[in-house]
Length: 236
Image 1 (spheres, rainbow, N blue to C red):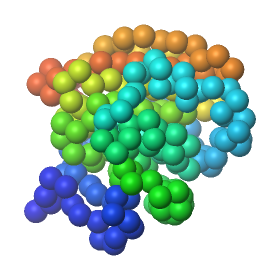
Image 2 (image 1 turned 90 degrees about the vertical axis):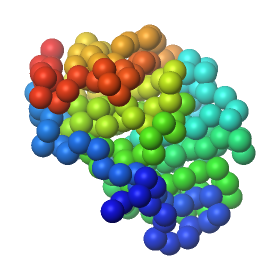
Image 3 (image 1 turned 60 degrees about the horizontal axis):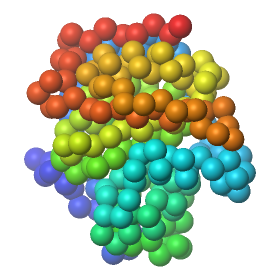
Image 4 (image 1 turned 60 degrees about the vertical axis):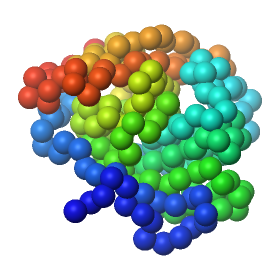
């Protein structure tokens, strides 16, 4: 039987370890998205200096209120751009969970975390329909420039709910573009999250880029829309 948290099969460092939570509802329980799903592309977004110059991470931290002591999951962490920037913000009293579905990305990120000596980062391999994170563990979950690549968004959003603490927020950064062009129209994003029971808090255009940050409050575990009652949203 899978325990609530499965220990790492190999030690990476005292802090950067892999773990999985027990599985949630299977992908087959949910409707397929009624819109194209973009291919997963390189985890490198141009170059990191260009991204820093755009000020995206500073805006995300401010708008989501990320601070010392929080536990933040970076879902679709890729090369770890946000991991290395959020780690000092949450500090030794907090934790960054770097989750992705591509083992090769996590292998590279593992090396980066070790080289930088980050002591509050945990590596986690998830699935396209299930982040497989511990229950009631997250203050914030971020999904940055990857929502359009999620093969089973309804399942992932549904299975994410139990991992979020009371009052937690979910922040999604994406471009104002159709999903085949590696963006998500805000109206489509709102519809898909509402289909699971999430409530929109705010949507802000990010300065210096063609992207937005949408912040949502999750439903309770009991008030989530049941998979059989979900209706897939059509792209505009």
